[in-house]
Image (cartoon, rainbow, N blue to C red):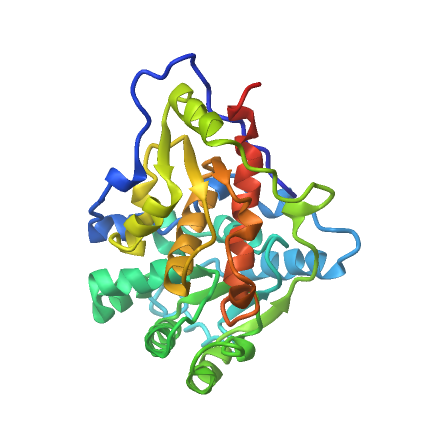
Length: 363
């Protein structure tokens, strides 16, 4: 179920010096945040029909069946009764049971592919459907305010939340309240995560606070388990060996639309740019070239890098790097801690992008 990416075209000498992520400080208006709540470019063309289930994992076929039925059931009037109907028509019965589905499984089993396929298959206009990561959802609330977010998303038929993550009790309360309001407004929900709804707080800071809030969230979703191995690594080698600084720099200068940054400097720059702007940070880029990749020094920096890795992966931007391979970015303590699934996801995605970038270097 992997996708292949064609490396950006090279010229002997680029028209200009490489771009720099560290030189960018984008401003993102709130209306762009709403307009961009659609499946990312990597998932523009995915459908249930293009999902290739692992024959050894029957839960993958079952997920396609359940989600196809869920999408079909979202046709017709908005669940809150806002659709037009004749005065003598019988009012539709209020929906019973969970008003959403929750795709649970490890990284790389195709959860985002299925979530995007659900968005595409739901019979509603694009402006009646929203798709975003958990971080993008909380950023939207920060930009619009809680009540305006409820009003904006409350007119939607479906809200898809990718990589449902609860990193602090404040976000837990915020999203719990938001989803409760949206369910009351008749919005259907779908989400992905690496753990079941009732287990999201395990192994994280203030887990008692998480679990107390999550109990209410769990009732909104029907958990749908998806088993399997990371498809990006099925039959493929481990993270490719990094290139030299000279090779990376030469490739950056020879590739149109490439950026070139020193990795430690980039990590410092990410601390000065709000994560809601990381997508805009990558606008118009065809490749990202990084020199001197080193272990991430602390957890706050690591979490920011995870968000950047997600945005690069969504946009299918190859990443060429020197220094350490990406599977050595995070310490053993980080990989064994509460955010380990985020870090493994970042490694998985950066490794896939590093493979995409190999064609940028010519012997």
